[in-house]
Image 1 (tube, one colour):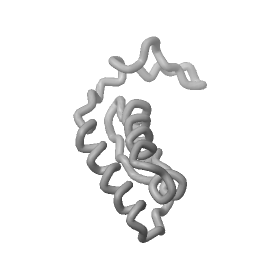
Image 2 (cartoon, helix red, strand yellow; image 1 turned 45 degrees about the vertical axis):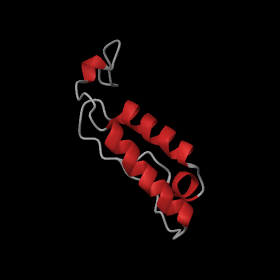
Image 3 (cartoon, helix red, strand yellow; image 1 turned 90 degrees about the vertical axis):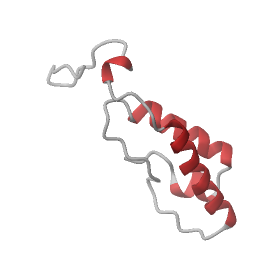
Image 4 (cartoon, helix red, strand yellow; image 1 turned 180 degrees about the horizontal axis):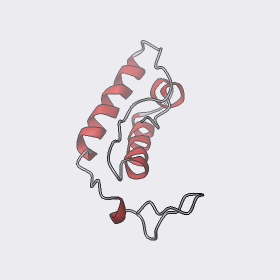
Length: 88
């Protein structure tokens, strides 16, 4: 869950920053399923910029939300964790 910084990106960033962060979050965290997009810190500013960036975050997610949940399509070689188990 997360991967878009509430303060740096949503409150202070540009629409382009938001779009880039959402794209990265989906590309990195969504494969395998169970992904929930959200700011990783609180968005406290009640400013026009923050609200516009929240709108951009939602619109970008709507455009990109149809992602594949198959981990094997996104991993070139098997992923192993410390105990030797294979995640693919």
